[in-house]
Length: 382
Ligand SMILES: [Ca+2]
Ligand SMILES: [Ca+2]
Ligand SMILES: [Ca+2]
Ligand SMILES: [Ca+2]
Image (tube, rainbow, N blue to C red; front, side, top):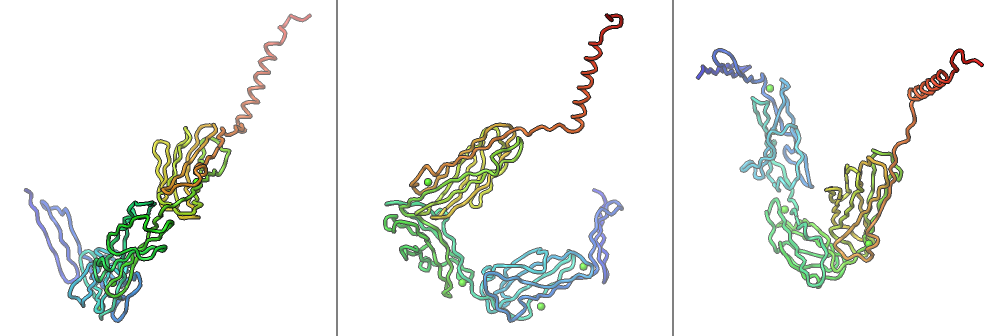
């Protein structure tokens, strides 16, 4: 092994650590000359924080202009226990959802700043208050759907509260906007034919220990009938080759009920190159010339659209057909298909100035050649 040496130089103003190998410095870290400063500004004592979100702030300075980072902690019990809100945060403010803090009548904010070498900290000068937060409710994404007869409608949900933790089943109530209270708990099964026919907005409401409520909703369709209608339009029906062709597909639900899992499927004309498909709800994907979209739920009277862009490199007539479907039975299948036709032609060729020159020159040469070859030979005179 070689000869490693580590030198530490320190005085009141500066410190440096150098790593020396066989007499040469191979690395060093220098402390900047000045320790940064930090001061908590909000909340700094006496405030009451309520609402969905707040922004914690502080001021900081470093005489050397070093980049500063901050560690931020919060205590609900006057400094007894701490929750870390941010580590190595690069700004002097931190936006935060109030329910991540949890209620407190003895809140303390603590901020530590470092310039990479020196660290210093500050906390709020006096206790502040954080109001009680509502429970956050999540319900199963698979809930929205179409059900008939004796099918079971599974209702699944969960509520978490910053103060109370997981909300007990007895404080979780399921309701329908048509049929009222359906039951309670994190899991509930309802037989479809015990519900009224039609569209139900099902809501799970959670109540915390301070009587604050939170809720989440999904649509459920019982014995529904809907009428989806597809419309396919193109920006231009006449196109030059190798230009982008933009289709707009609009799907409308003419009711009378909503439906879940609305999809669209379109086979691209052969020869075109897929570029993009951007829906305004849900998602789209292309595989092997087939564009498939899933839009989710479409309520009675509502519509959604998707913009599909392809490149049309070769001349010809391009016919595109799209088919839309939903989970609810459709009262008029004929309106679920739409077609658009586009004519692609090669661009007209207009010779440029230099090409015209070449054409005129070629003509002149041809005329001169004819004149020379047809001229009677000397001595042929009559
Ligand atoms: Ca510094
Ligand atoms: Ca302070
Ligand atoms: Ca609460
Ligand atoms: Ca239809």
